[in-house]
Amino acid sequence: MHKTSTRLAAGVLFALVASTSHGAEITLKAVTAFGKDTFFAKRFNAFVEKVNAEGKGVMKIQVVGGPESMPPFEVGNALRAGVVDFANSTGVFHANLVPEALAMTLAEKPMAELRANGGHALLDKIHREKANMVWLARVSDGLEYHIYTSKKPTGSDFSGYKLRSVPVYRAFFQAIGAAPLQVPPGEVYTALERGVVDGYGWPSMGIFDLGWQEKTKYRVDPGFYNVEVSFFMNQNTWKKLDASQRAFLEKQIAWVEAQTAEDLKAAEDEKARQAKAGIETFELPASEVNLFRAKAYEAGWKGVEQASPQHAAQLKTLFSNGR
Image (cartoon, rainbow, N blue to C red; front, side, top):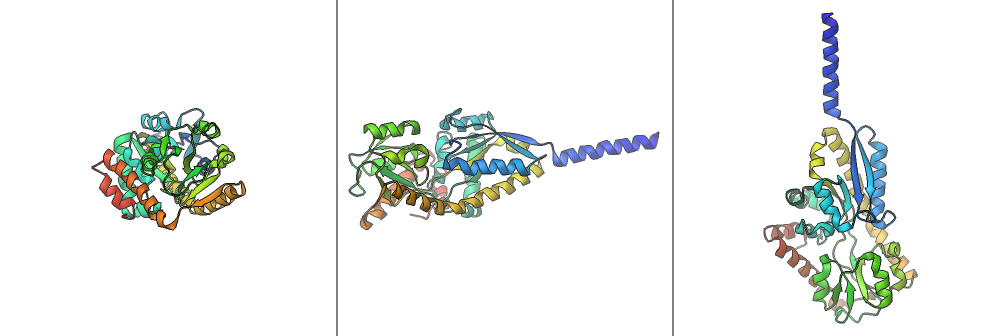
């Protein structure tokens, strides 16, 4: 009887140890700030599929919605409060919570270098302290924003142009003379059609997803900034992960960040597609290119400096090329 009890106790202890070391499968409620069929959701979709295929017994991701159910600018608040555990979004959408997040868009160094030089660690720490979220991964890297217009530019002075804008490049548009207007993506087509705006700022990818190519005649080259889309996680959920779950997630993060090597090729293909659709490339005169880009970064970093004087200088050193 004593031996039986001892064996039973040992079995229970072993089960407890195994449970502690491996844990039960965790389900992460996830949201994406981008429509499911758009370019900036495709990498997220592939990530979810891979995690769910390989993570049985360890981790599962349940996508609970997209922009149709949660406005993109609400994703940060939902993540901070734990309404969702995981988000495919951009720091641009939660800059009201973490203004320093705009440094990701101003980054001139690839994510691998930011992980090596401490840039990622610093901005991740700021996210944890200010918004209860973890910056897990960057899933776009090297793509630029461009100015797209319905009338032909004459140079780098956009005085008289009404351009659809978002906060991250609003100050830059003002610096080059344009009048920035905040128009929801779903209303841009109509705004172009009615002449409410003469153009818009947008990444090198994605205008076909929204049908804007039909009302676009020119793309201004060069581009500016580094389009940032990232994975973020609620910090409380991150802390609940056991060692095996974290190791599994970090392995998947390494995989998805490696996919950004395809971005430059994708951008070139997209430009060819734009040309085929009748969108002309307007190359700025060589004498104006450096000033155009300098104005972009000067305006961008000025915004970070005003919002976060305690972190701006260090972020600029880590993220920029010292312009």
